Length: 276
Image (cartoon, rainbow, N blue to C red; front, side, top):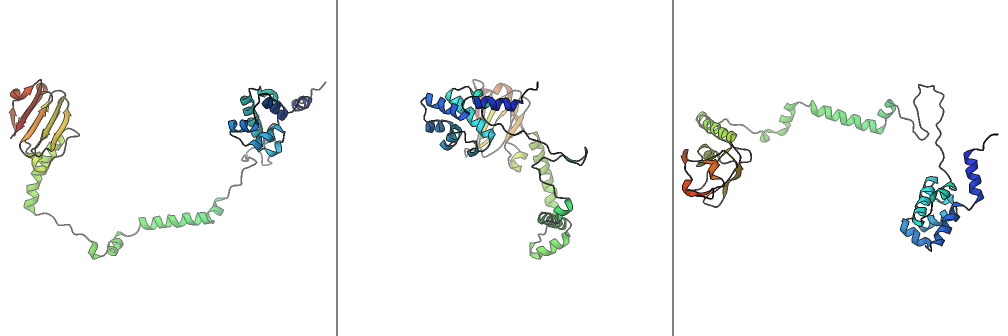
């Protein structure tokens, strides 16, 4: 004996008892909850709940929405959702279209739109815009630079004047000295003018972590940083320079190129002194 299809059995079971909408309405009324209050709790319009309780599936978007809304109502009312969902319409199973092109033909879903061939796309408005933009970019890339210089006009051409030979010879050693001191300085140190970098007033060399602060006569901090082991830093400025060394036991000081002892200025391993 052949068994009845599953859908037919479910439909027969649904017809044997109350509908899904009637079950939801009875559960809501039994809990004493007004349909408007349930709509506020679920954040859905009252009309959709009324359509669900009246089994008016045609007033709701689709079967997926109907089942989702019914599940939410069941959770809000504390109702087992399975008996209600069994009486609701199911979404249609998607069916693939059979094409006669053979096994090597490209697959196309029912909702896919046919693709426009490349020649037809190029002849359309979008293709023309792209072509114009490409031609403009190529024209700019290969435009003669001489024409650009001519169009700029004589008044916009700047003339570069080479410095005198004596000036270049004098500036070269100074630039080299400034570059050497800048390379030796640690990252993060303040960049000083070329004259000050060439002949720093005070230089610090640390064999361990030490905090340094140098303030000039105008109150401007010329150097403020923490040195690590093996690092050095230099500072200059308007005299007198007020100096604070955080750890005197690991820091060596040179003033105007000569070693300088901080022994008399040290208190609790912190040195405070002035360079005049």
